[in-house]
Length: 274
Length: 274
Image (cartoon, rainbow over all chains, first blue to last red; front, side, top):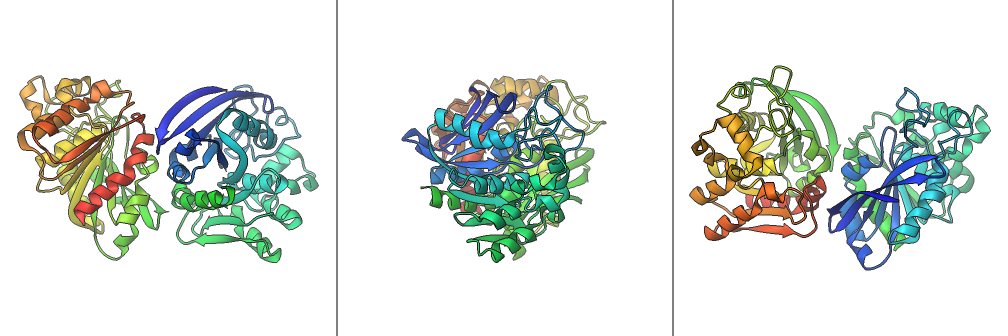
């Protein structure tokens, strides 16, 4: 992998890398924050999966995670949200194609060639991180919106690989939402039985999560009808899933919301990873 | 003034306004963060002046000031860096014209019609803020790069209006730098005797600053030759000016640097304004 940029941040280092991806069949970019503690030995990893339209850069510059990661001794990985490039299929809509990979392995044309973000996160990028950065093979995962969906679904399906889980305003029940049905249909086909493995609420119903789960949701989020936090909250309660859904008064869907609760989420993961 | 956007942030509110400016002869945009304490009564104001190419938005989204302002009970104002719009003169260079007002009142064509950022900050926007937002008429000022230059020069020349002062990597001696000579010549003309009122080092030599002064500077800043922190540090020492220039190992000129020390600067101002 190739270092694209490096900036000192809170005593640690905010780095951006690019690398050829076998999984996605294109060049991929990701950001990695290494806290000061990484100079003395490997640190646990917190994955932050971003939402629709984002790249590796949005949360890196606007999320405010570095201060808390530096304090708590966690590395933070910010992957991109889809394959990219001129040869990669795209769509005019903001919520399909580039910037909208939905953390699945597409099985339908034209997407199946490159859109394999599930395997990219779970396998390829994970190996790259562990092999090349001063980190422990010990991981927590969080994300925002489409990335919250990615975090919960990836963690539950790979409970042996992740030891802490949280989400900011996740797309909680995509099989029942226009943020989900459109994309799952395009990427996986119309057989809805193939969708359940990519629905946080349905996965929680079937498997639960081995640990406790922190979800923050803005009560003034402009996308509440698409996110469906009530489905996740209902399922957590019915399944007696340890954890909490915090409905935060006045907060919307923006990075101002993510930024405001970054401290809590980083501390949550640090307590469970150290 | 008209509210453009409003986002809950750290229990307070991040707002963006636009308004017709008599001083600049165009519509101007600024951002204001109001901490939770402003709901109970007026709070002091911290002004953050941005650098070349920035608008009101950069530091608002990437500076990380809200968390610390919320903790310390300060409002933070993020003005734009120049007049803007189709009818406003501009230049192809990034460092002249729109995005590069340099916090002066231009006296030369074509700039003198709109480029009056000094009066805009000191008088017009100050009045708008005090008249329309839940703030005290009590002000601190800081800024980054060109904005650090603006903060120091405006505060020293208006010591009755500002009670605390700091800067991030300020253009410290613009009369001796290519970041300064070009702009002061264009905006004020070639008579260098008119430039001294816009040079932090020269103003400090003549007037000092009534309080103590905090300056942070990245030791790995890619623009050190243009910023000339040594001129300011030398003058502070020679004049026995209370304060400190902190040379921060490894930090560059980016918002990762600003973000890393936002906490210290907000606390510095809060201690002096409350």
